[in-house]
Image (cartoon, rainbow, N blue to C red; front, side):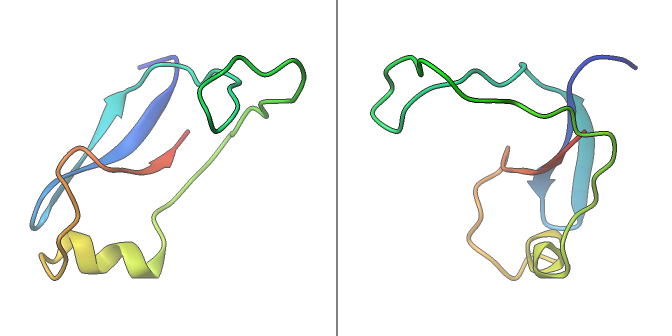
Length: 69
């Protein structure tokens, strides 16, 4: 598996590693950013607070990306 991947919340008790689109630089209003930087992430993990979503104790939407790598 190569490219951009992320840990995605699928539903209570289930997460998956999925291929994701590469990020693009954009302003909060959606306009293209004239400058900036996107760093290459070489490793990631989910946070302790993400465990609430995995265990079903949240209203997080399915498809939420918990981490990218």
